Length: 218
Image 1 (cartoon, rainbow, N blue to C red):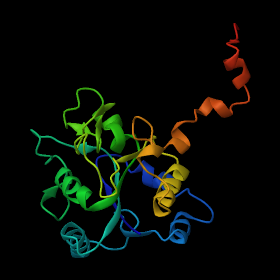
Image 2 (cartoon, one colour):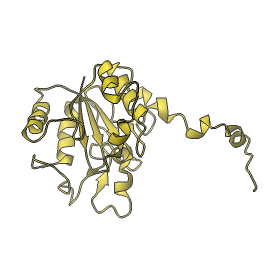
Image 3 (tube, helix red, strand yellow):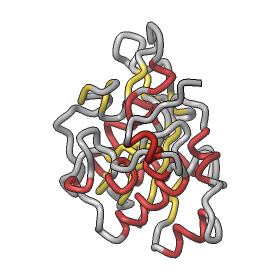
Image 4 (cartoon, one colour):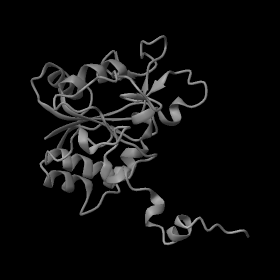
């Protein structure tokens, strides 16, 4: 399965986290599931015209796109044009690329809290108009409308986290490769249930104190 990874407005921390995936490393792990990157801006060798050719082939349908991954929030400013963030060498905004490529993809995965809900780049007065791929905060409707569905019939899959855990990303991609992750496997915010239905404190050895509402006074 082909993966195209776009890095939008953010720090790139989710990619750095992804590199911490093990057994034995993220590249071999994904390859073992039949997953390969068409292009990743931080990890691939292709640059310039080579990348433009890849994007053109995907946009026109000459190269099938199985999974579109978006890292970082989408900037809509100024005035809804998205031109605060251009995809270098293309003359087009990241907003435009996401909106044009998403319908070509069998699956769309938003990686990290910035891509899922706007994240830290949407904080404060949000002068750049940062939003998530399919959410603006916790409200449905972002760079893609709330009713958007991929070619598989599912909404955008939101792998939230700042940065997101590498296993959440790799397991999501591998479940998609195995056709074992659909809309019924997502929570009300589009997050995969395999990690979102478990809270951190569920595995805490002090959890019994929480369950019995036993709080320390000193």
